[in-house]
Length: 356
Image (cartoon, rainbow, N blue to C red):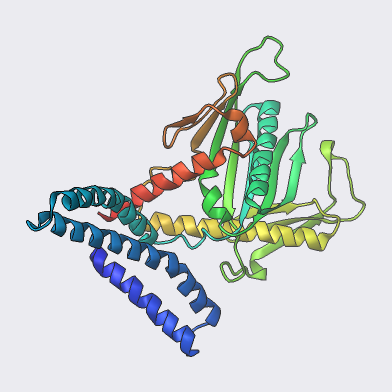
């Protein structure tokens, strides 16, 4: 299907939805039809803007070519034509990007998992800083950030931490954060001032609903035990901690932050559902394109995606060769959008190129 055919199809579909909503004759779910109608609105507006620009350019070119047009009017038309022609490529690309297949998970909330990697105490401290980076970023975006579980070290670092980030479009903004994050700096415990390299891994999973993933009770093994704090000491006199094993996949989730066994089980199931949903997405992606690898990386947790060099004050994303010399603003979440926007644009460019 040509681009023009796609544009006509989109405009026609939105009109059909609008007519159905106006008449009250909606065969499908009213909410579903309303959402599709609303989602198509910006695309149709973009199409109309691009078409208007093309018409303006054509009209002005005809005026310029007309021998009856006087010099003053021709000069004015040349100037206007150049201005419209400059806008055309951007307007066309915007339309093409909006027509790209949408990731169904983009609008979802997300589960964030941060774990210390290589580097001992320094890796755990860096993991805690990354966790707080995303916490501050969520606040800047107006999202709700709920800590689900944290395993701390004696120095205040995090062995691992899990959070639920709730809001519209969370996954779309954070999905490129999955992978290995590397830090280079002089640890506070380093007496001789040597720079150490440590890592932490980040996983961002789309939060799955019951309709996305159906879990059979028979596929679960649920164990309860007493919560333990640092050093293994018991912090609860009842068996409130929960460990859930999904037997078909072997995925294990433990939760012990809450004093209530019921709440710990609910949190553990939430994480399990997100992991199963992501596993199915990964399987489908592998089937669709066994050889293709996105230019912005696979999001695999084993892939080193970014380096934070504190002595030089820089943060480098290795997938798109982007370096920002503003490490403090990155660590407070203020400059994270610069990476997210660049990664999103690179992904869009790669997907557009694949369609050509």
